[in-house]
Length: 353
Image 1 (cartoon, rainbow, N blue to C red):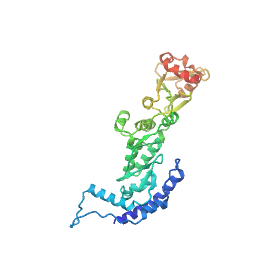
Image 2 (tube, rainbow, N blue to C red):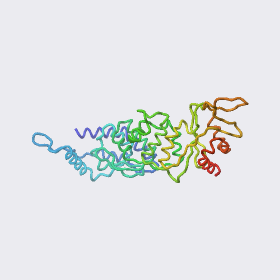
Image 3 (cartoon, rainbow, N blue to C red):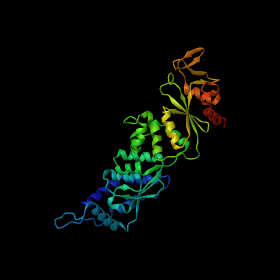
């Protein structure tokens, strides 16, 4: 019976996973030394004496479940001790064990996953052992792979055994720009419950908060900024009346680049960025003055307006005009400058450089 079970695992491996192993060999940036299909076949196809549980005269098991497991593990350790080790990737592990979590149990003394730096990851009772640093997007990919295929071992490993490698400032800004690039279920599975309670009030992560939640997930994975500390500034309208509904946030980075961040939740993004180690401040804008493209201000009802050909129009292209004002440094002439002089002084230093 056990031999038939092993053969079914081998057939599954050959039909589904060999392509994954070969693909990893051809495309892995680290050039990890994965085993060839032939080397994998030697381990799985070789005939060894199957384990037979110890029973009494009536056929009842003598050992309890734990003792029986260790007896079985010792049996297969001895059976395969002269075999060469076999190395596969995470995708092959998922493909084999999603169908049967115990599929690799007999081979655990000789079968290993090659990790993110080609390190050898052991398997014990179907679980991946050890804690590792990994690229943020690879952690998310593995979690989605696990959830899509109901692979509890891979989900446990991705969510609890991995921490994120540092990201550069532009990589972090790109996260904020990418609401539709992240799988909300994967984020929710990784995030600790206290993080979710503090930031997400609904049962599901809203699409409008997906990028901010991805940044929060990076923080929960002990993610840090790669390189020197670099300040950021969000420019936030004091009112959203008269600004298009698909509004974007405006972010100034320390290299003087002005970024448009679609639909950003500035309070959440600011708090998470600061906790990551990136000093981030919001600057409230109530007036925009430019020399070349007109002005915007708030009327008595707190509605944005601009004057076009001598006529007041109750709308404002906030982001476009704000970017022009920053480049012209005309924020010095607005009503916002004096109350926020400390922040604007830092902005002037950035733009001056």
